Structure formats: structure tokens, C-alpha cells
Image (cartoon, rainbow, N blue to C red; front, side):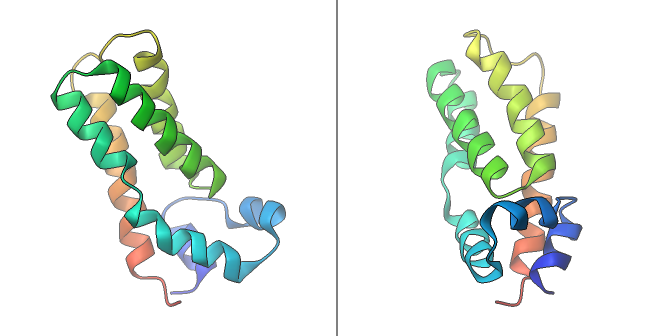
Length: 116
């Protein structure tokens, strides 16, 4: 799978990120580093511990990294949970975290298929 197909598989907009970064190899380099970013696991752990401050930080980081890389579906779900956590509250139920998890897993699944 090439980088454009990878973005299609995750429901993201490759042209948008290419318009900003203008270098396919640079984009691929950052995309391949994304699975090593700890913010998703930090978000899960912080929510399990009911630590809203750390969960907010992790969600905000995940949102920013995803947004910078053009992972729009992941960025949008992370933004939604970030805004709830910004108020110092935990999200009601598990639906928001389930949405983040679904998009995170979809993103990672596309990345592991990337031929780089």
C-alpha cells in the first residue's frame, strides 16, 4: 500500500497534509512514527484511573498529532473527548473513548500496511 492508499484506508485526506508538508517521504516518515506515540495509551490509562488532568493532556496531544498528520477521523474523535476533559469532567459512558479507539485502530491498521 502506498501513502495515498494508506490515507484512504484511514478515511483521511492525503492531499490536505501534502498541501502543507509538500514532501511524500517526509509524510511517510512521520506516519510511520505515529504508532510509537504514547498519547493513546496514556489517554486510556488516565481515563481508567479517572485522572482528568492527565487524560486531557493525552487527548489533546493525540488530537494535535493526528491533526498535524491529517488523520482527520482520529483527530475529530480525539477533539471531542478533549473538550469534555477540558472542563475537568470525565466523558459519560464509554462511547467517546470507543469512538477514539475505533479510529485509532483503523489508523494503525492502515499504517502497518504501508510500504515504506
